Image 1 (cartoon, rainbow, N blue to C red):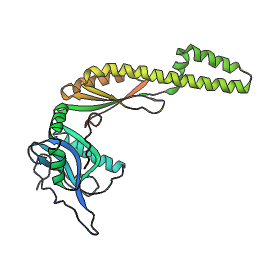
Image 2 (image 1 turned 90 degrees about the horizontal axis):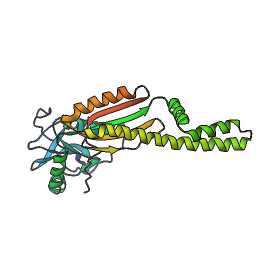
Image 3 (image 1 turned 60 degrees about the horizontal axis):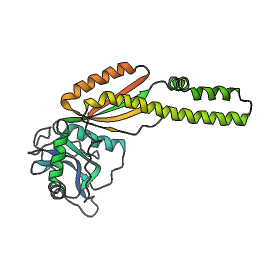
Image 4 (image 1 turned 180 degrees about the horizontal axis):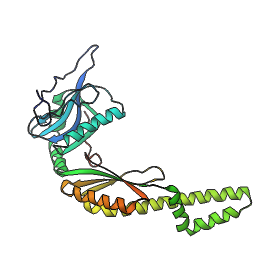
Length: 272
């Protein structure tokens, strides 16, 4: 049957296979609220072209595809396949992402041990996620030489110590002084990041329902936030990002990603 989005889909017959043939199960991508069977195309993880469809219990459904019962490595191809399914599903449904590489041996296990067993929990979570999207915002300094120059000018103690070290004739004391300068600059850089990240958050937090602050690595990266935003406010959020990008340029760059599934606000973990 036609397996375009929104049409019914004939799921493959699963079940365990013994002997030399690998056992087949159902890879679970997400939990959604759906009253009828849905198909999302042949996007299944693993590159075999497996159809993605729904398995139901009442008005809840798990989005699945047939899959060998294996441990998928965390590769770009596999994670992108998982993500593409979620992105297609979220065009039509609010969803709860399921942890990467969650595979059930039988569809009956999904119905009984996941959907039925956690029915109220999932219904409540889906109600929270309804009509909301995740938007990612990162801030990056474009010229670190400029930033280190700012730190030197802003911090009198660093400036004075650098001048003192420059005049030092003892190699040992010079080296010791430069190490101390390096430590002070590192501390000042972290303080500068925190201050500018706080300013960015203050500008965007009022436009969101919730947010998560994520780790940043390296000197250039200032902040990395995930915001949960009502769909009705997404345009206003977009406009604010545009304003900030103009305000910050060329000293800082804003990286803006989304909308994406709410990975940072909910993740369904299934234990069998």
